[in-house]
Image 1 (cartoon, helix red, strand yellow):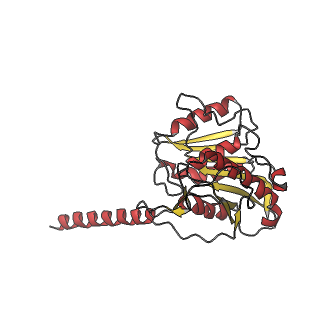
Image 2 (image 1 turned 60 degrees about the vertical axis):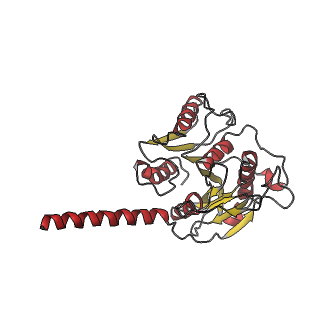
Image 3 (image 1 turned 90 degrees about the vertical axis):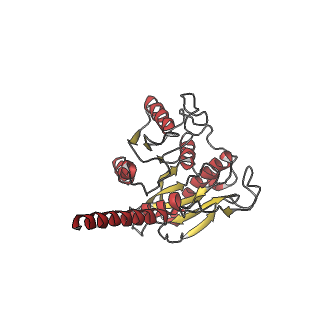
Length: 295
């Protein structure tokens, strides 16, 4: 009777732990509001097209995360690192969402809070969606130039400005690092005199890096001057890991400074919330940034 009671107690405890873990993974922690929200383009100067419908949040998928679509007014949300005597390194954060939407909290503001905790300023980019890859690249390139133009105002180091992207955002970060053309739009003002090339790139479970025929996707130019790059992926992300492997091999052949962190398990779309092998990626990314002198 006593052993039966113990077994029931253990089962109930396990159920409680699972429920607690699920609740933790499904509720995004509160994020501090950005210090500033800045339009990427001056009024009337945005190249290309916006969305046909008004910007809106998509219905929750049961995980509680915020997904924003129909973005026609790209903005940068500034989350500065704690005040320092010297300008801080900075990263533009590109959330994922298959170019249909951006997962604003899990792959945006939560990443910004993590970067801030390690002395890195963050700028979360809401780029154009849906189905506007050309516009999204223009938005990121402009965001890089704009951040450099306002680096002194925001206490940022314009020579340590990187990009970090997740899934489709990882693809976007890769395209800004290996652009087919130096700038994907004609310069609109003095801001565009600043470089639109990131100084380093972190691609977390990036998507669309291959052409499905065993080659690097044609919208990635390996003859460009690529910055140091870190690729993060998991073997069990069956849809997209092959692209990272192909891109890694191509960077190796081109002798581009980079690392490829490939974990056995992790899946896709975990942000900072992975419970499998890929949960090591944030510490590994910080170690890589320190080793390359970015921190």
